[in-house]
Image (cartoon, rainbow, N blue to C red; front, side):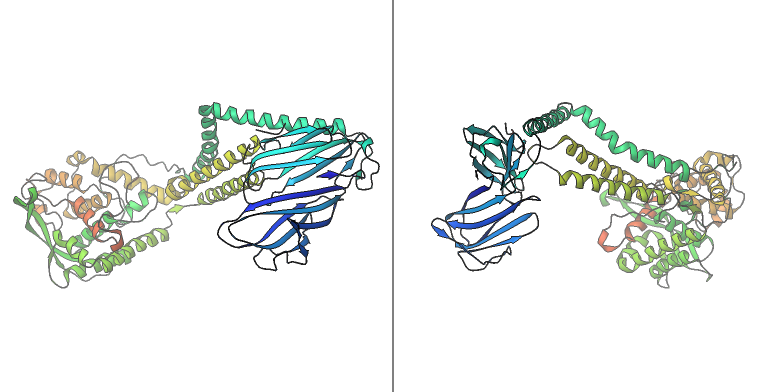
Length: 591
């Protein structure tokens, strides 16, 4: 770069490129300019050969080798030259002149030129640039300060060296010349003020900002524990505040005045498939609800059941034992609710007009898994539809959580955009690092809130007053069944009540507790008349002619009714394995 006595800047760039085994047919350079500047006399030369103007400026292969074209892109002048090369190094020289680039102050002339543009998508290992003018260089700097390199002064010349310039990173060489070295300002922009002190101060502040940013980033790295704690606080506290506020306003159950610890019989006629959904505030029904509905149909006479015994292999087939079983057959034809009809469809398909033992249901269901899984899915959908129809729940709290997810996600995206837009790959700014950390924290907060929205319905949903009153009574009844020794205080007096106990115990996942109570307190005469109690009232569970485990039976239904693609490991929903609370299981810079 040469600065003429009138301030016109003549630039000569040399680009040497080594090509591999493919033909490359074009090269390009985009020369930035500012308002008031003008680029003129652009030429492209290779060795002694001057390229002819007239080539296309589109960035695509093709065109006549030995030609170039120029297009004004508004703030950039694009130069594209056409050539043919294969497995060889080539050096191209681009020459042009700048008018209005140099700025004439009262005391100095400021020449600041981008010697390497940010349009390059390749990393540059080494860059050198030299400027010379009509007088001795007063001061010179390389920009930006975070690029590794140095600037040296030699009389009328200033030389820049930059190493490992990242892709997309510009490099500038700025030099100040004495104003009295120039004979004219015809090629300059003129500012009627002194510039030296202001420019030197601006450069000093730029260097100090860089050092301050580097010290702050080093401080983050040197105190990783403190940084991690602050980040965790930023990544969790806003989400916890949102989730907590939503729970207090929308998810907390309202007081009803109910104060009983136990209900000694089912408090309402709500079907056994629906009660667990009420207690856990939604979710899909599963294998326990399916099994409870099956036993309810037996209790109501839709299917007949006869107690039998079945031989079962134990100890890896080395021995066998007799276990109590039920043999089912079709019973009375009666009207059924939609989800009850889905269970009946499964049972009817297994029976196929004949009889079948309950212990063999799983194998028979697995033989027709595709059709059976569709019926099980229909059962779950019909239970969900009935639950929605009864309007037990208010889910208004889902809306502020969803809005928080969107807002936190947008905030994270905005912060990330701002950070990436100004990111310096060699030495990032402290503010950009904070923007990145803030973006990540916003995304983590959004993930926490989204998790609460998807998996924490108790946070944003509460029962209506009628639903809460019924749920409290059913919870008291569940406690009564769980605490089975209480049965001796007031055991059920009728067979119908005993059988309802077992049906609801199955839906709660605590059937074994009810069976234990029945062994102790159920009169033998009632047991003999029951269609669903097939245990010996004097036997111990797990030995002799004992009950086939209802928990295993429900688990087997859940596995057998799972879609074929999910294998045989999928259990159903419902309350898991008995007991528990009111919830449930289920499913270097320039110097």
